Length: 178
Image (tube, rainbow, N blue to C red):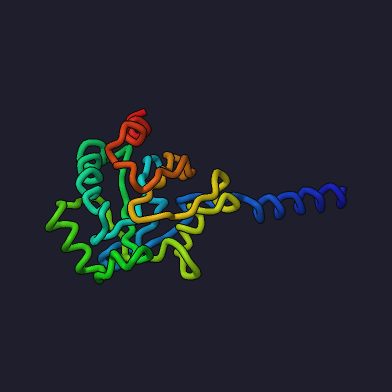
């Protein structure tokens, strides 16, 4: 009996060690410096996007805001992570980025503080998004600004969408509305 109890305990410990992390296991900071627990998004589909203010793809803010206005609410949201990893196209402070987004694109979806989405200082959330060993779905590399990650209502990574694919593309809108 002791052997069976020991084996069950060992299996339980091992299964917890190898359990996949979920999107909901992360805490981040908003662009205003407030703590934000991603578990507060349980039950929603989430589009995660790394952004930049001085990029050829910056006009995607307009489409992001459009789909947020149309679909955002109880079942869907967008969170943006400014990053300065690509040709220093996001040089501003969090305050400057927030002002830029509001003034130029009327962004009302949640923007987070500026982070790194690649390299040695990659934010832990982006480590999870880009490593199959952590997300259980796929390996990817953040190739440029405005790369999108789709997260389902249970906190699982569904897929990565290339930076040049516009946020209002049928593939993304179809996923949101299914």
